[in-house]
Image (cartoon, rainbow, N blue to C red):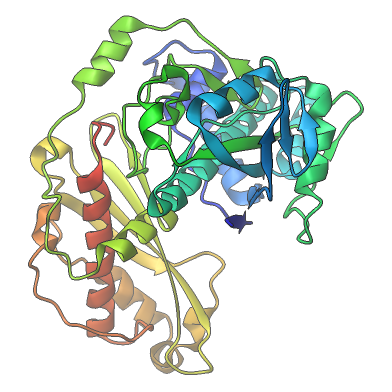
Length: 424
């Protein structure tokens, strides 16, 4: 049974999704004061936000004549019941996500300080964070399901159509019935609303009949999923598709012209999907899902963030957390590597216990930052690149650092090569 708890999920809100929640039309780019307010909200949350994700698989799922029973508790959602039946679902995963109480408190302070614009942009950013977190949770479930020969359905929540928000408390009770507490504060008010309000609890159905989903338009999860880094996508994301938001349920009219443009964006990958990697594909698939975040820019370039976790070779194996940032040019140019940098994560202290750091201090971190192998080369150059093989978890010598860069670039290559849409 799957279980997930993440108290430090990486939050990278899609600018287009944020603009949509702010109420701007499709394709609008923020500029002027709006861009400054959006950047301020993002920067504040990056420093102070405390997002979290929690998921656990329900022990039992049963479909009654007029409802659904999850772990023996009945929910009277006709739409959830119908979608589970249509997909032949036999399992369910309960999910809770939260942007943290800090954002809500800061937004309230800005309102009290008579800063309505700052309040609004931060408030909406909280909604975008929640939408991103539940989408990220769904992507992780898809990664798990893929290895099991299963498929995950779009999520449903109390307060969505045909599911009374009054049942929010019962679903919350199921989530909190496990031995492990939720990683963040979350309570249900008498109205059914959640506190903190920038939170969401949901149910994801799971089916072994993945083939059914392609014939049931409302059950195609990829069309409703904006998670750009996902390598399990089976069909393009359509912004006009039926989708959930942190503010409630949003069902805009379908824009057929825009949908056609998205379909036209499907291209043949410029990277070899059958490439001979030095790492087995199972490991690459896991790393791409759990450690890699890809962000597409308006000019077609791609920003990649890889989060490395390891241990020092000495000093009792202190945990290490480093972040690799790679800027790639557009797909049409072969994803040229424009910039690279590696540095310890902001909360990492393990690097100070590496032998090299003890010996030369920050000069070692400077050497790490100066490593830019394959800079200027197309990403495909990582395939067949002859480099040292080093099992060392530390960063003290050139071989161990170059070896890790090879793993990072192969993971990025794998993730992009496996895509079937033109989103990056």
